[in-house]
Image 1 (cartoon, one colour):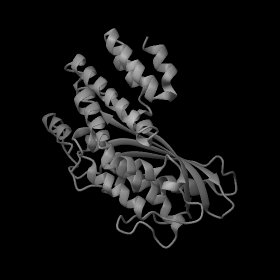
Image 2 (spheres, rainbow, N blue to C red):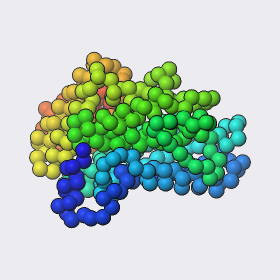
Image 3 (spheres, rainbow, N blue to C red):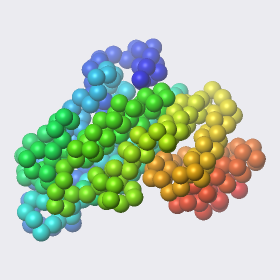
Image 4 (cartoon, rainbow, N blue to C red):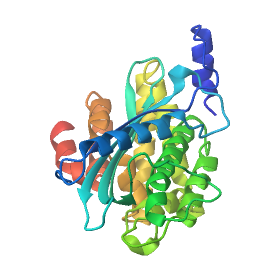
Length: 306
């Protein structure tokens, strides 16, 4: 799926670690809101365990070279609960994708999950079995289920950006976690009725055959647009403008879908830089569409793409 960068790496003489893991993840645990009721060492141990879980596990059957590992970060911000060793948390997930012939990393995921509840006792083993997502304690299982879910989603979007529908297998693995997710007191984010923007809806949007155009969006944006900027800026910008038209049509036919907002998170500066030097007609069209479908950054587009 990622043959494009594998060939580049081979041509450059990169060697070693043919079976390297897929993710180059940094997990940070913030416990300042928990107070002094729990030893800070517990959270340092948790942070180390989560980094090991994400980076040492083999998530695919593909061979990744060390320089191909997907750069991603996870910020787990804890809040205390009335239950011993149980925490509520928000989780910020960020992942980037390298752009061909540049040192630039384009944000492919920049998302905040507000609904992570889990139980953790220092030194407990972080286990995950994709065939048996929930263990004997749902609150214990929920921690690794959430992190495994986002590992597969990072892989899915990354693979989709290199080949059309290349991420289908990993979207399916993420959906399997959703379908078999832990279910217990305080656990949310896995069900349709848990809200309109959560893990359930993100996977549903990418697996729903009615929204298959979103796979074209990711492939066209990255492979036909961003990766071509170095060799042909005009053609690449035209491809990205075509993507914006696709998204505009998608949003008109399917208003308020989670995936539309998800796509744009973290991309406003990138899109402005892309179109600020475009011909006036293209710049105006891009600004018009972006103000309509990326409402959070509408004023930014209006001011920067005059």
